[in-house]
Image 1 (spheres, one colour):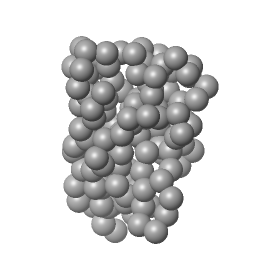
Image 2 (tube, rainbow, N blue to C red):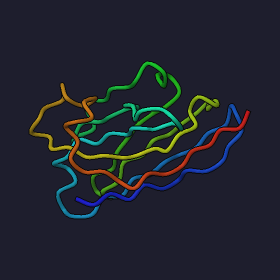
Image 3 (cartoon, rainbow, N blue to C red):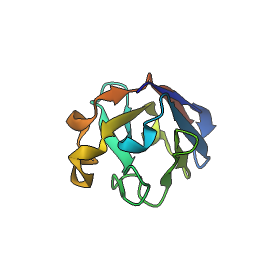
Length: 126
């Protein structure tokens, strides 16, 4: 599967952005999807993930209540709605896919994700 992330940009603190990740192929529903991010000088970290059917989601504590992940299997797309953004959210955001065969307990496990998009920059100005 090939992934194309979009929707990043520059936003003021307190603002919102919606990221999208479009997947190629006809097997999108066989993948769990995740968003990860990497801030300058830091390691890539888990942000949020959603199971193949959309029924299971898991969020990093730092984004709970502010970010919402969703997916539309008919459109082969996963979304990340980001609200109440602050400077700590500044990073390159990557979408990733992993086989649903691993099960939902590995949703936040970066090493299980075998497919990655190119990343989209999110910059939050204070």
